[in-house]
Image (cartoon, rainbow, N blue to C red; front, side, top):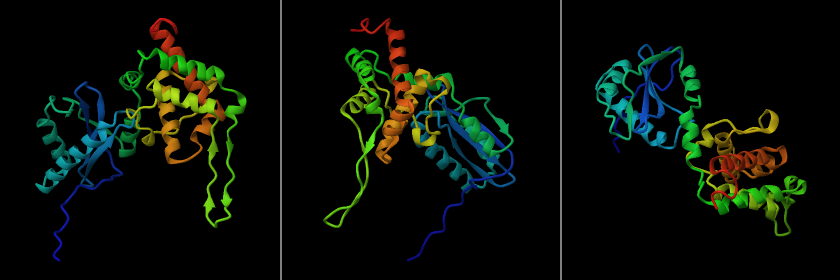
Length: 264
């Protein structure tokens, strides 16, 4: 069987400085960056992990456009210039006019992409269902009912079973802990709008207090993370993160609705 040669592509890495363009969605929120370095014949897409999930699909679209530019023999910065000229603000994503800038390295651009903006916070808070008073009441009551025994999660015994199979150890969540976790999902704090796998794992902040948007980030990372590896909920229950998340969200809800009974 005859194999066609692979289509030419720009290199995906460079140690040198990069030129970059900001790509935004229809709301004007940055989704990622197109970058280029002529010396290394390198160009690519840099996702904003603080942005929304649409950045993945749009990143593939922009990468396809870069590949087409490479196939026509354009140097990387010329490809960026062409993409900027042909960008349509009516599309799902577009190059922000006048956004061409430079970074000392691709690593520096990656760090820039991790910066969280007020727009990122607003998008996550918009996921919270402030109209569902019953769900918020359930969250508040579940938090109040959680005990130290619930927070000290036990694990099942693992090892060899009598039939020769091996049983993996797993956390045993109490009914009260499961209630709290379920309430977090019910109020909208567990959301696909946060790219938890592309961001650092959540941690208990100094003083134990979280901002509401960070509480959504932590809730999403903890609850969705449990699906990929047992123990994230147990760890968050034991180190105080789960309490900080629920307390922050309840405080936010009472602030925006005027109190626990105002939205009833």
